[in-house]
Image 1 (cartoon, helix red, strand yellow):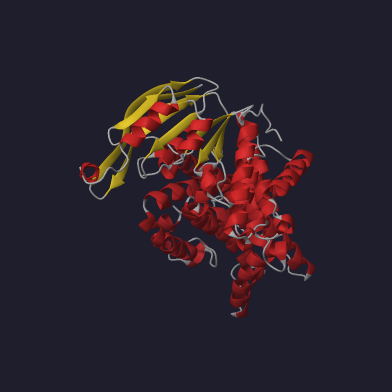
Image 2: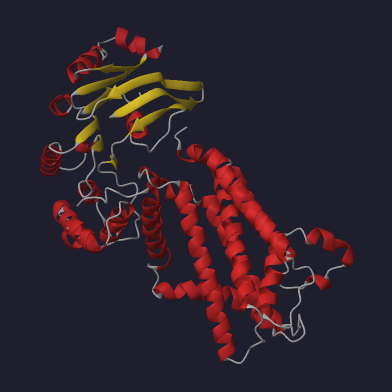
Length: 263
Length: 231
């Protein structure tokens, strides 16, 4: 009957995120026949389709690493990024009704969605690696600690970009239409299905600016002992992720009232 | 205590900004029920939502140490594909009610809303009456110092209205209300302080009767009143 009267701000934040997470899970996966299996099936189908396509072409992208695994390590983080990007754009509009509860602000909606995307990404990556290993598609594993580190950074990056896009998408709804146009080219220049070595040398300097490329190369380095990303640069990923997070938080903080304010 | 400090709010219209109120300063002491009245579009709901921390003014602040509810009977936050129970559980969660306490609250809500087995059906299959019964049932589930009431009494059938009035009477013993209504009897019965939102901005009265009197002055008296509204 009584709300927990002595909740401190952290407890309120925790309750809000927890309630939102349950809600998002229910709305995203609860209505389908296979329910929570979609958590895995959704990215699995995407990854498997592309991976199958490329392995069909019979090319080996990197010596010693099965194409399936190579692709998986690239596509999984990319999907996570692309979802965080897109969900951020729509975070305010699709949750309008929820902002009638004063403790629930756009930040919570964004954080919840990024958390969920990230959990789905990690879960599906691990599950698909295990399933592939069961079928005999394996490579020698390299560095668990590196994977933990880069994924923490990657989470910061996704949250930062999602918060930024939440503000941009709400203040300039027209900009939301361009969102897919930004993400799609990134797909081709982030090394999802090629290794940077295959691109002419003179473009390397420009491509190396892309944090996603570093994330994907570092993921492969962490997963496969025989992989050496030509440009993979941990300090660069760390810097760009933290800068992105700081930028996202600042943009959000400067604009958050406007996001829910009636005009 | 609820304090309004230098509150200004305006809306964008095609003909420039329309100011609802400017530089409002007021202090509402504890234990006062507040009634807000004015014409359609005068900004009553906006003021209510600003006081409740849901909307924000252009400038100024609302300072309070009270726990203020969401607008009672609000069904905008419902997710159609989730069941009534799941929606209710979500709102409990937001307010820190989990586990056993949550189950108790949910039982009470189900009982109040009188929707029976529909409680476990998706909200999108509800009739509008069922939706508002569920929404109203939910707002009594959580205890607050102040409840926001925005025209809630105008929904539902006679039986439901009677029930709402009962609940409000019950809650009045321990909590206060901020009410937006067009029904003068409801305001007279439930409010101590009156806020009138007129064409010249916002006026605050120590008794709701004075605000009602001013509001009724502005009621359409043929011809010249309509001409006045055009300005």
